[in-house]
Amino acid sequence: MTLVTRVIPCLDVAGGRVVKGVNFENLRDMGDPVELARLYFDQGADEITFLDVTATVDERATTYDVVRRTAEQVFIPLTVGGGVRSTDDVARLLSVGADKIGVNSAAIARPGLLDEIADRFGAQVLVLSLDVKRVSPERAEAIPSGFVVTTHGGRAETELDALAWAREAIERGAGELLINSIDADGTREGFDLELVSLMREVSSVPIIASGGAGAAEHFAPAVRAGADAVLAASVFHSGLLTVGDVKRSLVAAGIPVREIEVPA
Image (cartoon, rainbow, N blue to C red; front, top):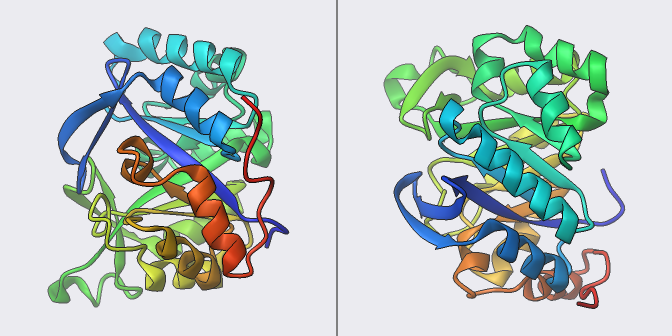
């Protein structure tokens, strides 16, 4: 859908620190979010995504502070998700420097929140984040696509078919879909290409593929499957890959990207 493919480092933040695990479990400290965001900006990242993975009321002030300090250092779009339950939450995050807002669990609980955010701020601000996993055989009849929306980091399955929920969210005003494969998350075995392809078939808005990146050659197949942007976390935080490595691999595969390096 887009002329160039975006490469997006994702920072899962808890208590003001970046954390990462496998399948959303066994989280470990990966560093300071502002420092990492600046590093990825210098490497040529197109956007940065912050996900507050704990999103408690007590830590909300920490999240606002992290977003504010990052916006002062990083001059590319910043998407923030986690704990957003009202349009006032969106307004506060935008006021401290966020450009787009990711919504997940709150929209599942109350889908009308999507309409409210889109009506007040515009579809360009609203990103629906979906944590998706393959269903067990006994649930196949209830979930025709074979992919179910989950909450609580993939530990709790909803009754929502992922494709049907994506369609509904777009109708309600979501301007972008962040599709995270719980099955692939943190495994470094590659993106779930079937999931990306199915989402592409039903989506009229840009798709961000997330979950499973482990090598530079994993990114181009996700784009060919239908992703407009590719998101990764652990491969960047560990230093296994730089943003430039990913962009060079995409260019080598014939996929256009924005400039590979931004001067520090």
